[in-house]
Amino acid sequence: MQWRDDQPIYRQLYQRMVALIVAGDIAPGEALPSVRQVAADYQINHLTVAKAYQALVDEQLVEKRRGLGMFVCEGADARLLEREREQFVQQLPELLAQAKRLGIDKATLLQTIENLKEQP
Image 1 (tube, rainbow, N blue to C red):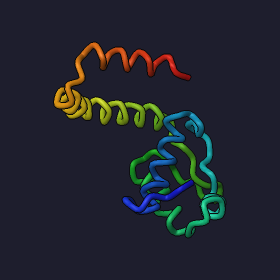
Image 2 (cartoon, helix red, strand yellow; image 1 turned 30 degrees about the vertical axis):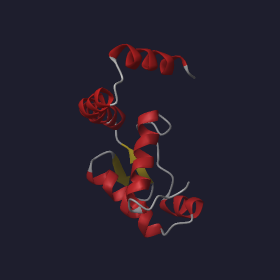
Image 3 (cartoon, rainbow, N blue to C red; image 1 turned 60 degrees about the vertical axis):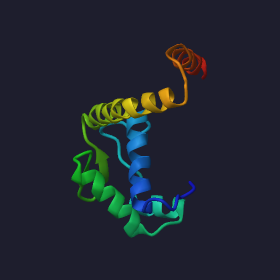
Image 4 (cartoon, rainbow, N blue to C red; image 1 turned 135 degrees about the horizontal axis):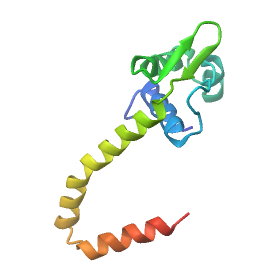
């Protein structure tokens, strides 16, 4: 994974874990990779991983099980999906305003969306 300079690494890792949960790659009840494993895989400090995982715990998306690790909470995927949908919809007014400023009409926008839906 390539780290960007615009956000702290722990925040980017947090977002990566959220994306994995939303995509169903880590399902409710499943364990997250261990802090040590993630630190080794991404060649980052284990404290950075722990901070990202703690953010997930703070939002009640994962739970710590003593001696077993971190596990995705039941319903975390649905809550995250709803949150992601809300954030997406909140961006639409600005995107539509930008399209209008650029002279992109409704028909072109709809056709573009249809074309994107057909892509794998």
